[in-house]
Length: 270
Image 1: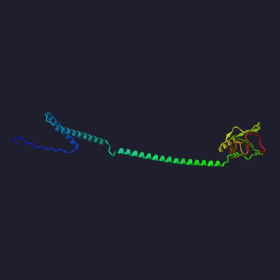
Image 2 (image 1 turned 135 degrees about the horizontal axis):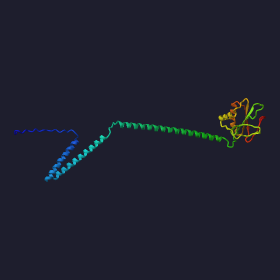
Image 3 (image 1 turned 180 degrees about the horizontal axis):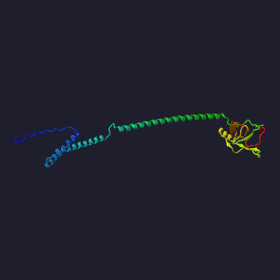
Image 4 (image 1 turned 90 degrees about the horizontal axis):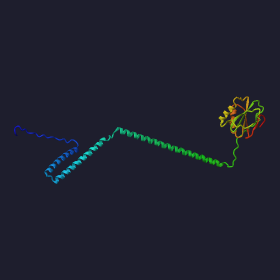
């Protein structure tokens, strides 16, 4: 060894194999491609490249290109996977459970609506059956009635006597066409005809109201009531007579044929 020259110690650098093998392979292929291109350049410059060397070089370049494309596809897949939400995302789970709960409620409401429709259909069928039974019963009853049967006569009164030897004054009420009124006689009055106006009687309440108004100011101990009823108003007369008796008055209803009149005055038996 020459004086002044020191012996250089070889330093061995250890390369770490940690990392993605595909990344290491890509780096190696990239470096190899650079070396091959350099060799091809040298051989081309010096005119010593052969066809076999050119084919090997082209194949190596194609392999390196495929490796690069595979690496790009891998990176793209990794980016897509990283962008996807995690499987246990609480927000997605809450939205899914809420949608599921709404679906259950809608299904329950739909079932209840179907049940209600079925009940209504059953009730409608029951009503139809009842109507059909009533119609059959009506037809059977009509079949038993003779076709030429005479109609029933209208109800009439049996008490036709007027008051005799009664010192109380008479209050004359007339009833015609279902309307009740009070007859006011004058010196020129010679007969009592059917009135054209009055208070309509349709039920017990209207009869009681009409009688109360017409007999207002009269007392049972000083007046009596004579009720003249023209034919066609006998049902209303029953209601009026009941109202007169409830007020404490004595009543003597007198039926009159339609279209006729009565002479004014009292006494005698009709």
